[in-house]
Image 1: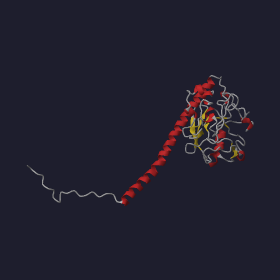
Image 2: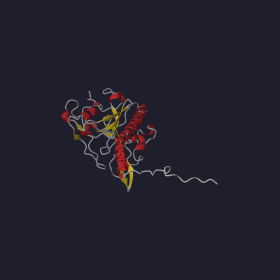
Image 3: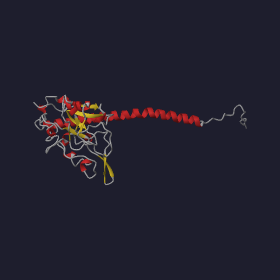
Image 4: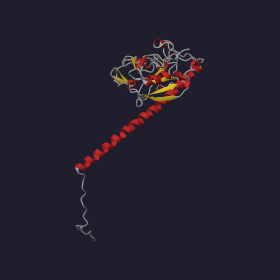
Length: 276
């Protein structure tokens, strides 16, 4: 019977040396550096994806708006008034069903049947605002608002002498491709269904410019806009006054002076024109 010969000293395996503490710390430091480099890129990718989805939702809402016009002899729905496009006003109260229950206002909207009964397109995916309802956290249901210069009953109280569009045929200046209809409004600014761009001082008295309502800045400091011709845009804001620091659960003070703000001018240019 053969027996395996005992291993010689030269055939014995050399014991493996483990990592030293310093080597482990170096590896951890490298991983931390890589994570620090990758996470911002991933965050930007997520924000970009949300912006793309936001624009797609805006185009769907504009299609619903256009279908409504086709059935209404081109008369636009009211942004504010007794026959407004959507009733209800948002805040941070759990007792206010308009904040969290789509059946309170959204399913009763003039546009609901035209938008495929889809509640998703009523809110930007980057809007993470919530309310507490009897101890349960619920997401709010709407981030979009309509340009107040579309058939509103109160917009002329903010600035008189400008076009209040009643029909699609009224959009001759700035024209359908240059007039926005919907935007995403900040969670701490949004209330009713209209978004007011005050026209005081337009175009050549910048000391009179102000921000009545605040647009969102969810997409790396930008907001989504949908225009009357059906296209959507993401507008990046240039002035810090347009995107004040968000304080969760607190409403902003609205109607604040913002002289020489280029963002205000951009919105005014695309909201309405002086009546002739």
